[in-house]
Amino acid sequence: VRVRCGGTAQENDDGFYMRRCVELARKAIGCTSPNPMVGCVIVKDGKVVGEGFHPKAGQPHAEVFALRDAGDLAENATAYVSLEPCNHYGRTPPCTEALIKAKVKEVVVGMVDPNPIVASMGVDRLRNAGIDVRVGVEEELCKRLNEAYIHQMLTGNPLLTLRYSLSVNGNFLDQLGNRATESGGYYSQLLQEYDAVILSPSLLIDEFSIPASQEPGAKQPLRILIERAPSSPIKIPGLATDETAKVIIFTDKKMDVKHETAQLGTEMVVLDQINLNQILDYCKHQRFCSVLLDLRGNFGDLEEFVKEGIEQNLFQKIVMEVLPLWNGSRSEKLSVAIKSLDKRFIKVKNLQPRISYENVVLEGYLSCM
Ligand code: AOF
Ligand code: ZN
Image 1 (cartoon, helix red, strand yellow):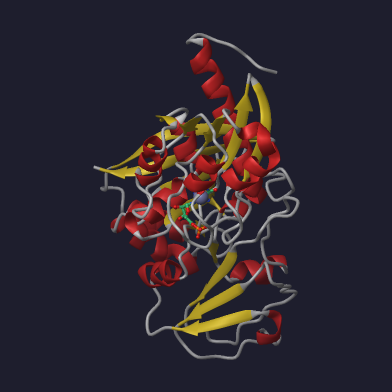
Image 2 (cartoon, helix red, strand yellow):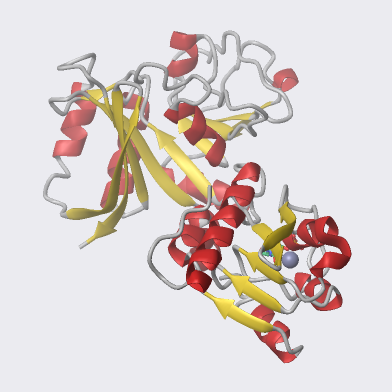
């Protein structure tokens, strides 16, 4: 349904088609890293004549799919793209040239590409070829779509999110809310968005399985397990991995990993010292755009990471879930670690609530003062 509200007809149409671009882009959620998610819509005489999105790094860009879909109808049409068309030869040829060749009349861009090899040069190239270009339609929405990609491009580091569950009286819980892990549940949806998730190995022992997104066709994040100098060999019961669900165990002591982990695609990395910075370095070298530190299971394993992250402003984002419980099972240890940081004044920006079954999920951005 097309809803018109306020603004000029042009502004309404622009917003409508750009939101469609974002919707298309999100079809590849979790699959494009280190590339951004991008959607493109070709509109002629008020009708959509072509649509496309970027499915995966190495595959053609959104514009190419949309132009293919539109065929000859792209001539004199308006192309809407959620990200500035690229102007470089990467794994694929420049989208600017494809748009010029297709003779589109106008290009409407959601946001400029922060990639320094694009950074407004795509817009300039199109304008120099005589195409009208407008930039910044639904910009906030387009930026939110690719917040991890943008962060990685601007800082070189992956976006780091801290996730945890709370009871209504503010205790840290080591459980998830009702139906969170099912398809459509917030946790299942969250996992598919991340390139990697840092977990306590106790989860494997307690749950006999490794957390995985249940969304249809979801790409699973790399699961990073932290095992600090354990006294006994790591047992990994029921650990099932495949090409899309890799596991890496970081440890500071060489030890046996039972269960023929190598065969299951599990990698082991022994470090002199394990801390959050070291894990982030590893993720950075993998060109990950996003990492989730998931506070579940035995918090003890991750307590130092939370402290280090807060002390050194390593977290950009938090996702917290409030369960309809008074106490629940709680971690005294973690509460103590967090309390020791109470003097830090960190503001949470854009705190957005949403309801997931009977739980409240809050997402926000940490900003240090
Ligand atoms: C677009 N449309 O759909 C995407 C763009 O290695 P390549 O050739 O895939 O290039 C990757 C870069 O291209 C990526 O870092 C970003 O700057 C841009 N992505 N551009 O016009 C798209 N995915
Ligand atoms: Zn491109």
